[in-house]
Length: 451
Image (cartoon, one colour):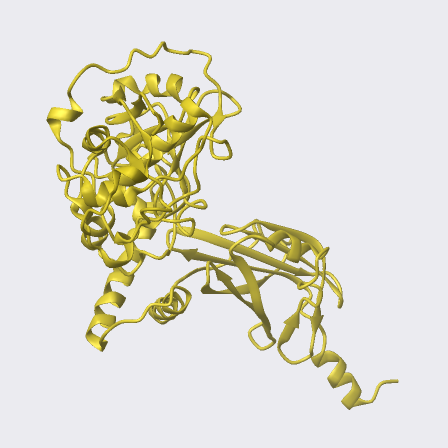
């Protein structure tokens, strides 16, 4: 027979058996976690929201005080380990409060700490009609401030003064509300904290959105006569020999120069079989019709390259405006030109011509200009009907993906904000509805060749 002391220790060390459930609203999305203790050594872990986990036989251990551990979580072959491997989510400390009979899970998502409290759930009895629903927890002001601290660390932010830091904190907190609103809108994909989270929307637009149309070029000539292809299927040029890796324009509104450069790279590769990495810096600094880091458009960029007689490789004229936010002086040399073009053609100039883009994407990627105001906080998913149509940014459509049922599709779009934004530097835009104004200024290059 156990002594009273031994019995007390045994009772105190009993693991928290049964089901514990917690829901937390994070920036307009819900995270749901369930932990069911089935024995002293095995539990069932289920999670949905940020990431999905279903691990019905996870090994766990309880120290008899408060700490719960998943001893195999750091080992390949363990269910939780394998489910979270390669994702931006991780599980940290798990604790049990025997007095409140709750389990607290500390997790991280994209480096941001998230705490969810799980309440014990009792089964419905003959005298009740439903199992009690878990309370929905909301993010506290203290948690939001801790998110900012984690953001500073993750992105190596350093502010010049306490006043500057306070301003950035206010911008960050305002963006949290903006992210939540965008997540509540089913037509904007999924949004979260990223490297732009301490910028006001006005600052973001000034630094990264540089499309400035010139109507005489935009509306000159007719759209390309592209035969419509009713049976057009999915195509993805990302891993082809027509597309260079995702670039980074930095803190310079040179998106138009990047979009033009990328399209020239594509059309030179199509014409010659040789994929070159060309110089957006040359266009940014040397195209005097446009305004460098203060903006421009792809049509006049093409016109500049045609008039100049060619474009240099990025190796001979590397990009430097991104770190300084300055256009820079022109230093191009014609002897360094590696490619040239004969001109450009518009694939589409209006929403009703988006079907022409579907036909053209079967042949090649397409330079497109879009409304990217809501892209500041994008993480993944499909930007749809709620995306604006006031063009302010230029990129490149590099694919078209149809749904399995054939009733919907989206564009695969390469951005120029590096691979730590969006889906490895890409964004998905709903097709067929001119989402983000994607069909209002779509072009390809003609007469591309090696210099």
